[in-house]
Structures are given as C-alpha cells and as structure tokens.
Length: 165
Image 1: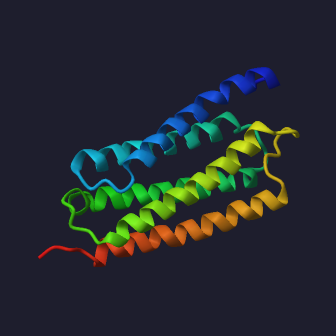
Image 2: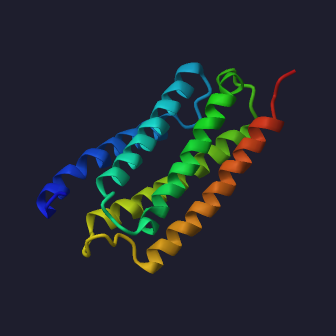
C-alpha cells in the first residue's frame, strides 16, 4: 500500500491525533465540572479514533494477532467512554467519591504506558507486518489486564459510591 518513506509520513497523522488527545485527557482527568467532563469525553474519543486509524493504515496484514494490544486499548477506552456518558450527570455534578479521581489517574497512567510502548513499536518497526516482539506483546497484555481491572473498579465506584444526599 505505502512504501516505507510514505508510511513513516502517514503514520504521523494518527500518532499526532493520539498525542493531542492524550494531552487533553491528562489536562482534564479529575475535573468534575460539565466542561471538563465534556473535554475528557472528547479526548478519549480522539484517542479511540487515532487508534482505529492506526489499525486501518496497517490493515493489509494477514495476522490480526498483531493488533491485539491496540484492540485492548480500544476496549478499555470504549468502557471509559461508556462510564463517562452513563454517569455524566453524577460526575459533572461532583457527586462522586474521591476514589473516582484516584482510579481515573491510575487508568490514565496505564493508558500512557501502553501507548508509549505501542508508539515505540510502530516507530521502530523493523520487519514488515511484525510490530511487537513476544516480550512486548506480553507486557502490553499484562498492562491491558491491569488497566481493565482498574476501569472496572472505576465503574463500580461510579455506580455504588456517590456522595449525594
């Protein structure tokens, strides 16, 4: 589809979108007003679209297993977006436990770790169609499982631990 030089130029577009979205996520994580939560939703949406664009750019690959770390991040970000939409009123009203901020920051840190490893793999791609070594794949899978548990805990906090009344 692309030769190596064109690929290096085109891959910068989704990476730039992901970085810009992540800056928005970092700035708005922990905000509990309406505009802050809306910006956080926008940041996660941009991150999701950037990751999907990365997959689309690399779609000629015959091995879908190489996309699993990206699919893990898509699942986690989608779950975070669901929680932000479902509990928008509770979060923007400030009717949430302080645990929400703690787990939100933890999830952001884990997403940052995952994305930095993924960026490194995409930028240092030596073999066509092979982005992750077995060790990198295992580390990304472990980070995804831990982050998934953090996000599930975040959902439990939002559902059961409110400060209303």
